Length: 222
Image (cartoon, rainbow, N blue to C red; front, side, top):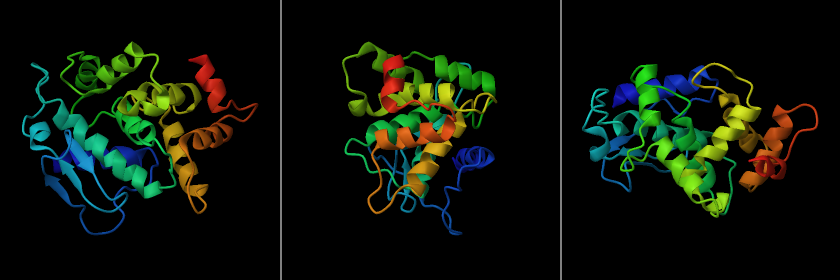
């Protein structure tokens, strides 16, 4: 568990994110049956909990079992990463926080090799709360508002990264869009922070030099 969290932290730092550890003391991480397979509380401080059900079974590339032990630490540590930057104040914030955290599961490969990460991405077992299943669920429900999509908004964030990010290395392609979004949330926070659509507009203006699109423009092209 510790090696996967450290590997996730190293992956974030290698892509120029701010260190998700905000002080010199170790982050409190518990094996605790919180809601779902993991939870991160307290923004940039507070604790992280990983459910025993998600961590006890190590990933087996032959059977495909134990996938959650690979992506859960990455997903939950990204929530701490979001908390370090702050500045997000959205009435339906899960389409940002959970959508982003699910999307980055497809950007980083931690704790195993790239072929195994690809296999996990392509696993369509509906009992597994992985990236592909949330993408499929989003496509299966086109009438759902993006702002209500929570984890299923991962496809939208993937689209933003691949269309407007500039980094081309795999599997992190476009991850600089996500980093710029979080930096913009921090830098433009003011007293009350900003909603997600405002932050996307500001990020697009930062990433695209000539005639940057707006959130509405992007949404119309999907």
